[in-house]
Image (cartoon, rainbow, N blue to C red):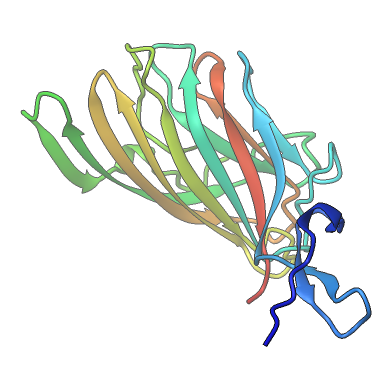
Length: 221
């Protein structure tokens, strides 16, 4: 039985962004299909930036009812200041203001990774918000005395476009400061039934020297 092969150099199909290829019954044999349930929406890269913001409808950002879950990947964010927490807040007026009421809880694990002479595993009440319009911490204080130290993590926000329910969020972040490792988990509610349509990230002091944040939409399964 002969095996048919196609000429790779003549294979010229350009699918739309975020799509994959699948076989079909038509003459050309292929069609575009949804590749995964997770779609990359936007990447913001910091360069001595005071904030990084994703606003629905601006600069190709989609932050509405298109997806039931939005995920943000924070990658090697490095602060300019010597004492700073990574934080976020949201907006219900497309970024005109950030200060929606949040109630949250926090948990952390810590370890002196290089000296191996101390460790901690505890509820981190200092990072909680109680019906507050302040920015929500994603890590505790970061001193970053070394140039190779930064933080990375993931934040999920669920059903931000709902006008029925408050909005739930949860995050898992890792940071290193002055050779100490910290692993932080935060969860809570954005206590509004208005649609959330923008989010802003910043450090509690100084600028975001470098790093990037990637925004993804996660579809229904």
